[in-house]
Length: 298
Ligand SMILES: Nc1ncnc2c1ncn2[C@@H]1O[C@H](COP(=O)(O)OP(=O)(O)OP(=O)(O)O)[C@@H](O)[C@H]1O
Image (cartoon, rainbow, N blue to C red; front, top):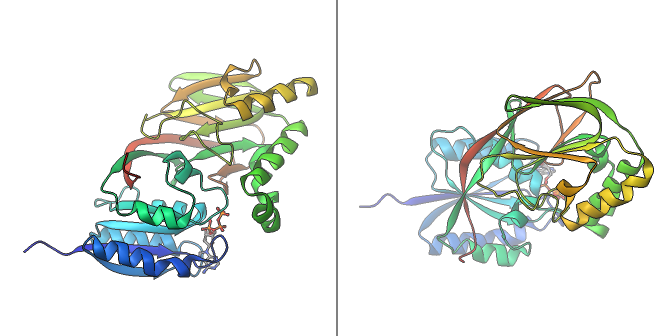
């Protein structure tokens, strides 16, 4: 007899509009219909999602569904990376930005995202390594990296992704540049920089078209160094970000790489998928096609 398939729902009751618990029954129904025996694990605090997901890997679950915002998803994925057995990942986004879901064309409406769990279609996705943790969207270094901490929960609810865009533009305009050394695949860039970005997917930080050339399984980091410029050139940079043409801007150094090391004489803070990361220096690397994510049937 075939082994019974096992699925775990990792739900963060505090995510988004605190609606996770309202969706659990429907997700359980869909998964049971597909023949899964379902376990529901509710998070209570930071890193619970990571530990639940590690358990699911060890117990050879076939599927893990992240029901929450990007924080929950990020923690879930951290529990999966480098495990011998990695379950398929289903995503039901409840957060404000939901970059990863956007990049994979997973609907942002939770009800519609739950329908996607019916799908048998999956895609392999790259994972970024940042020192000894992992990311799925973006690493930002510079003043903008702190922008996401400054967005209040009220602003997030009211403005959605736009809150990040507005904060980001505000910090760019504040002209905080830093000396930066960026070493990548045997090359080196040194200079004054306003912002360094390393993106894995095309939609990052609420900017829908920040890195349009990025594919989720291309095995490289798409890196943008926004150099120090005088105020007059900031407008065109912002326009190029919104148009998805950042790499064409004169003030921007663009490259792709598998490994990047970023250092500075200043202990700059970093932002990793919207969360505070280690101070510089940091090492970034791509693990190609490391995750298998359930996506809408094409
Ligand atoms: N029961 C809980 N109560 C409060 N916080 C929790 C709970 N369970 C987990 N957390 C923490 O909440 C953090 C934020 O969750 P998540 O990102 O899913 O929601 P969100 O903040 O609404 O989403 P977004 O950041 O996209 O707006 C998680 O990284 C986790 O550490």
